[in-house]
Length: 323
Image (cartoon, rainbow, N blue to C red; front, side, top):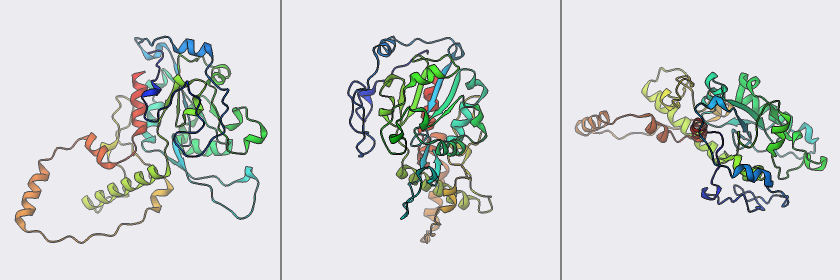
């Protein structure tokens, strides 16, 4: 498929590209929005053409532009200090990758995917923060990104560079500045904010923001699975994710990619849960329970749902496979 449009009116946050919003639907915080921004007539003309399926994805290379904060990672809040300091010297906020980032990373940079997909990062964060988030998200694979862009590429005035203002990612900059042949027909922006794509809304795949609340839920899921593994095998080494929780992508994903990497600093900060005392049960009920459990089938789908992890990145892989 060479180009796909997205029906924004069907998304639950009721975003309509023709209406210029005055706030971010994912937060209660008012944003400073330039109400003069709107898709160009030439862009809307291109977007009006129907999609067509190609015999092979490699016949038309695609460009995937990835946001970082709120999309691939959750960053811990700023630490408030009583003394003032240079904004450029502000301590880095800890970045926690979204679950299944290892599998997402493996998919993006697998040989069969790179045959048709170029991947870059474009974040509104400052360069030093972007470098840290890219390192946490892509590790040694960051050299395979075709570009890493930060706040200094957004064309902000100096007064806006060091303060929180609503920013827009004009995809035409990527089309003109990258030494690649891409356009509105071949580009997909993965970002958690609809306002970032106000100039090219039909190239935008808007996903749910990865927040602190979602992060805590994922950590609790990790803890439950780790404790379940210890109960099953007390002599097992440090807990890792079950291979059944890894997405099955043909010819692309290693067999045991954990949803949350053990190197995540938050894993060691999880408080231990106290063991609950169990009431003794008679042999009859224990026997019937054992028989009932042994008859229950296991499946990858049930394992994923019971674990409770955020599976957004798995859904993105499915969308990319359909392009």
